[in-house]
Image (cartoon, rainbow, N blue to C red; front, side):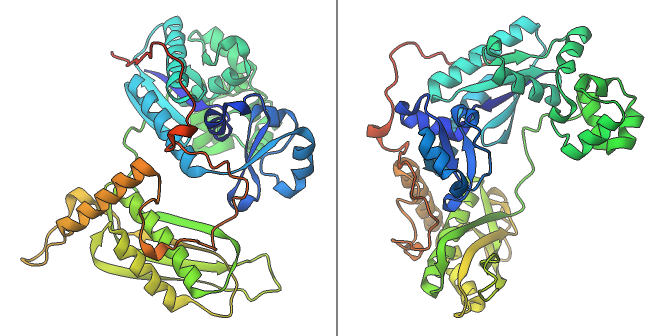
Length: 434
């Protein structure tokens, strides 16, 4: 079986560029919640030496001096772009496994090396034309080889954005010889130091070591990595990931919160979002945990953290029910003397909405049809007009507790006037068949 890893290039920055083409070629950085740290950079920003994870206040002057465009994160937009990219990728693959918001593994029947590369280039072109997002594709016999090929495809201009690990043992050996041991997927700095102490300097060196010795050095995980580098699959495709066991929604506040009503709005908003995730995944929940805490970095302030739970007899995905539960729980743990920095919710006791059990007559656990229809209508409106266009009133309007996002572009996929124009021409819609 041939595998591939498709990875969106500089994904968050690319999303901003699709909605604002004038940003092409301009260095871009994306900030974390509350505009704290840098969580994404364009290639141009990386070339300027702006480090990932750096607090923004430390690099603000560099960004201003170098003309770097700085944006607050817009995760709802990035999530929608991710869904569109994944939908296109899934059309082409026999097997499909989303790996992260911007990565997915694809599976195909075995084919000649040249044919595999041609397929990868067609997929890449299709994703770009239909979503505006550029992806790099690495192909090989195992997931680890795909990851290494993908990293090489991002920097090797001659690859055209798609690289296939050579099928021949000699070709694979030459490919792996150019990969330092610290650059192998899954090998951290500590393990790389241990390998180098035994003369294992490259990925190819690791393939030449006896598996039992690798296992003594790095355990089962290390042994599997070595086997995958040899072209022996140890990590199969997982098209049906394990069902969620819980759903968490939490955010830090843009400023310290003291008033109960502001906290109540925040936990209700998180509960409504959690209920939305339940419905997206076809799940119901029976338990809600609310937690809150003060700023642990402010040692001059009173420190406090707490959580409490409410368990329902019957499972539900109704946002109104969970918002009301969140407020009741908050009343039991709220302290008026504290300055709160963060709160969140955790939905537990998840089960499939299509497998709700019934009890004795009159105690049917199925939600009333009108409740389900109401939630379906809310989801349909929000999908069409934008997230939270329709929401429970308990989630508030002004939301003074929200995190900082002063630099957000404000662009949206739901406003036609903000969408880039697509060039006329044929639109290839490819699907891979055995």
